[in-house]
Image 1: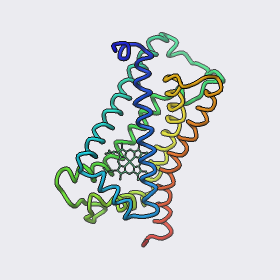
Image 2: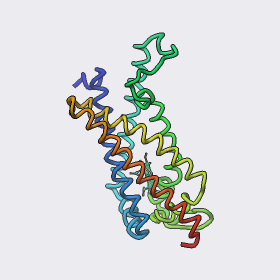
Image 3: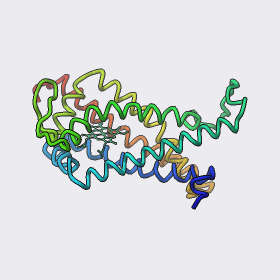
Image 4: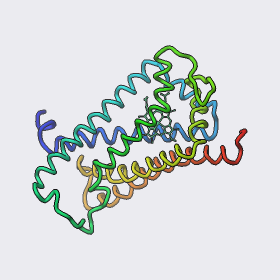
Length: 233
Ligand code: HEM
């Protein structure tokens, strides 16, 4: 077992497994959010299931663990790679033609993705699940009191503000680059590839990354457009 924690390939395997689990969460989270476009009631039912229930709290703790492990191992591997490259790490380097930009910037992209998560959590998770866990049945949102399970009200409120919409779109772009390389790289580390499948997995990774980010962007832009064109809807 110690090879898993100590060897470079073991650490990469841990990153791959946690990364794929996070991609599965994002597929669910993006699909869940699209529901808000079609029915506020359906969305709020999902939000109430994901509120202060033991299984939802267990899920949140598990997700936090996955993000922490993924990040800590990324940090360890990045530091190890830097050390291995020695002085070259600081030399001006020209990127070889067949090396993607994202593959060289995965750590920075990951830090950006986590950075925006702090904003997202302060707007949604903190005012929803955390508020409920604290035993409150109402929370202040833009001068009004709403239920912490009223996810539709939160979406409507935040995505009517241009700066929030811009920040989230920047977030999705960083997420797209991170996922499009990360998913493919994880599959490669796990070993589910050969010459034919390597290119297929590359395409599949881009499709998965695009589906996730487009779904998030669709929800964000839909509610902003609704605020602009039908402010009383
Ligand atoms: C359209 C964009 C998005 C919307 C409307 C949205 C909405 C929400 C809502 C309503 C919650 C609170 C659920 C609850 O605790 O009751 C939540 C939690 C969360 N969101 Fe998002 N989200 C969006 C994008 C994202 C993105 C892009 C990520 C990650 C890159 C993300 C990661 C999370 C995580 C990790 C949680 C905590 C989940 C948990 O407590 O188990 N969200 N989001």
